[in-house]
Length: 293
Length: 201
Image 1 (tube, each protein chain N blue to C red):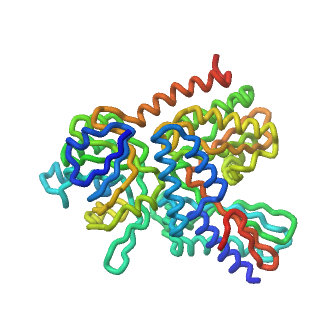
Image 2 (cartoon, rainbow over the protein chains, first blue to last red):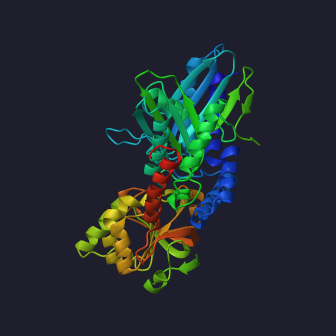
Image 3 (tube, each protein chain N blue to C red):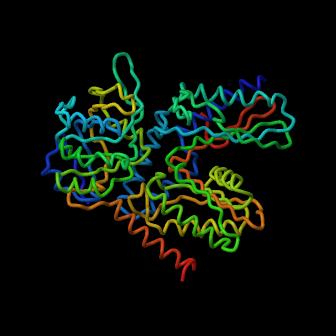
């Protein structure tokens, strides 16, 4: 197979799928949210969201005008030949998807304010690499919306405060964010490692499906406690008041320096877009998050 | 909670009947305007120049749409609301001078705008953030574009709409502001959560 071309084509598909159709677990969580929400204003927002995602899916149109910054997570088999072609394939796919889907051009030079026009530029799309044994490649795309990115927070907490400090930090961050990140949100929360490591883990945690509990029972319990706590804030869908502010909290961690307690909270908006596929060594492709008809 | 279906131009009397939490659908004309368009409109007013259209009784939509030209016609692809707080510094003068009756956006607006809405008779309708396809579907046609020199997102897009909504009345003309209410309640709840989790005594 032509690895570069296969990756490029699959990635264009993934970008289209991601921005036009939410994964099943997110759709289901939004439906449940509508069911459980008691505030009328909140229910109206959730109904509009459900109508919007149905229309977007039917017409293959981006569900939100902000199609995000494009982030990739690649798990490559150590035996795959031609891994040096992957980066170019992902960049080319991003350019193609920008015109073919279309995606909004969202890549702006911070210094001269010029929009590159094709969603690519220095360090963007950003590629997270992981090497594992085997000869397949798994590609995940996370088109990350700007509104929810703007309220992500990083805190170097006190080790003495520990988990209590973490709980307070998460609650304060959600309260401060209010209506800005287009709730109901998904929260990725991570502690330990270091400032950059915690935020990377928090963002990656956004990828875990909402119907998959944490494999660590202690963390699963903490996720539930945090979810209950932030949903008592009353911010509600789109900040108009209600019970459902957050759909799920996904935790991860790294061991920490004895003197440090880095904590990171990453937000995703209700349009929690992601898509994954596995390319096998024979060139066959399985889509993991979406049904491809 | 009442549902209103209004046709533009909307009168002050109609606006005064609405309260926070009511739902509104608009048919007729809405005009997009972001920071730059607000700034220029107020400048025009100051210099005694007239605007490209009379905004009295219309709805202003905080939105930078994605628009494409098909043959000779503009087509709206996606048109979700943008964050309204950026327009807070202009909106009171805007409402006063142009008698716009409805402001549409996301995230709500502040005290200055709330006071102007009470004084001159206008409401703020919250449209669901990101629901761009839903918004685009209610836009039947692009009637005209003005001030295109400001760029696609900042231009005045004059849009024909049918049943544009649902808009949740989040600021009414009686001084109520739903976002502010939620915010102050949230701060009270924050303390209760701290207590419940034993984070404070």
